[in-house]
Image 1 (tube, rainbow, N blue to C red):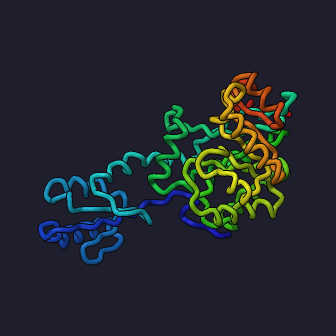
Image 2 (image 1 turned 180 degrees about the vertical axis):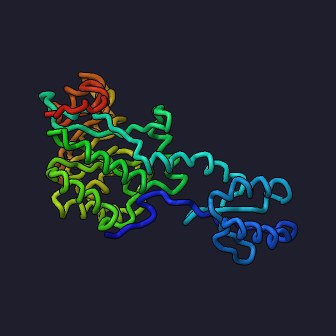
Image 3 (image 1 turned 90 degrees about the vertical axis):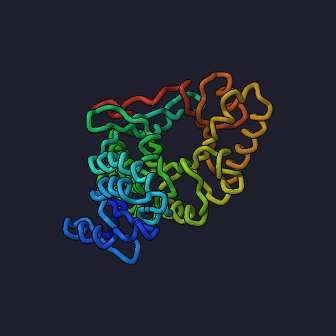
Length: 332
């Protein structure tokens, strides 16, 4: 099976660019010390590559005897950054343990039909630190992005979500971050294999494209969704109307489900501008054969208006807040 370092967080290597005559004069002694302590990965001219375990001590050394304004670093494929920003990465090393130990659980929120019968559940990730304290999901995903762990955290969430789907008899909507996927054939294979091992029907799974960051490469996203489509898996496009999710992109990606962004949903019953947008996206969804779903519904008046104009599925606090998955209970 194909594997890559993105699947599980391994030790980060830091490339450090040391400029300035005074700074570079310290390099021979510095390189000798790093070599003798097995902290040096590589050295070429005024660039050294070191293990993460060396970075905190190096930073103190730089501050003490060097001009840190002319020292930069980068990690993996990132851009050069001032060395004083290195502490930010060191302070969020905890994200690696969240991933390695799969410190993620799931809450579920119902998605209902016009008659308010449960059609599906969206699975929403929740995280804990070593002490068992909950951590805001946004904080976790932000930390993962800064340490180039976006694929790793996304994969863990997908795998744990699929395992949890075993006890849910309805469809489950599972979020994924499209920009984290390098190669659909390799990065998504384990998710599909796990569903097969657990005997979960592909028709039960709906993979939801979430936009925590903009997707610039639509062609790459098409490849990902084509991988799902060819295997009979369904997918949803989230936050339509927000970010990249225009009608043109909706037509390009041809999702099975279109989730109208809540900014067009909340207050739509009394807001003519939102009504125009909701009808526009409804028409586009029906044109490509996508099931129109309105999310973020809190007021019954909005639900009734959206149902009346033709939306088929609904999600929001009006029908239920995210709740932990009941232990040893099948949700039908």
